Length: 428
Image (cartoon, rainbow, N blue to C red; front, side, top):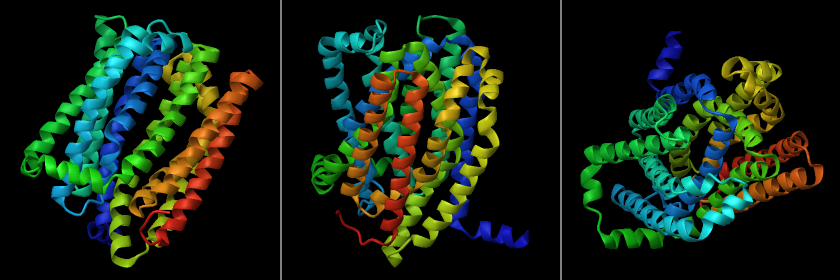
């Protein structure tokens, strides 16, 4: 015990992982505790509408920043990192304005018809506002990872989760609007974004204040490969996540889309508790190891073993009881989400294992390789869902095919990222 305590106290990696894991755990457990309330206040159809809007918002958030925030970690110095942060946020606001104009005058009717969702037109305005809030949140997270502000990063995740969850719950009870779930989600994200700006300025205001337009333009040019490769790749990744929701809504209705969304959301909670925290800490550690020694293979293999043991163990322990747990936790109207979760479980476990490792693509600057993996991810998802909905014709069959394809894609990611632990930096 003394030896373990000594190793924890003297290992920055372990301490940072525990610090961030604690914050992520609270941030994920908090909404988890409120889901029994939300699942009884709101219907599956309302969750389906939020899932559709969130899918559109996620796409806008990726396009909006050009993914310049991904370069913050590897910037040459703090001043350049601040320039990248300002650049990403400015691009986010410009994209928000353009997206709002397009949605108001061009896209409302087509999207509503394709998704068979009349309410989408009334609430689609939340997408641009939520997207810029997500960009600010993500930029601040990347800044904290670079500067090893892991306590601040933990607080940021907790504030974000609390703001979104409490806003949804409050509006669900007071019934001041017809879509409290959607409005609550937007209000929570805006509150979180404002908090990020305040904390960033209080701690590093001088770094951001010293940034000028010339610095922003210089950073945009130097890291232009991020919008050229990382942004399109991340867009494909986000589209890959949005495709199932949008297709299930169009082919099987809002109710089934809501059940599917709930299954995916509740899976994401335990995954994010560990996976997200380790990803952020591992990226910073791997970046240091590659710069100093040219290899981070040992830490990669150690992380892979731990994640595999935890993920496979949890799968074998809980997969049989998922329908019963959903019914007990959320109410009898959500039992279908438990059956869907059983089908999706193998893919979600491989997502849990591969997720922290994807940071190797950026750390090793294998942006083109990452782009092509994301092409595989999006294309595989599209083909699986299209065949499932259009050919198989049943939701269960669609989800089985979807889960199998996702397992293959995540396994490919693990193989690729392990290869790059020994690579010399530079694009392929």
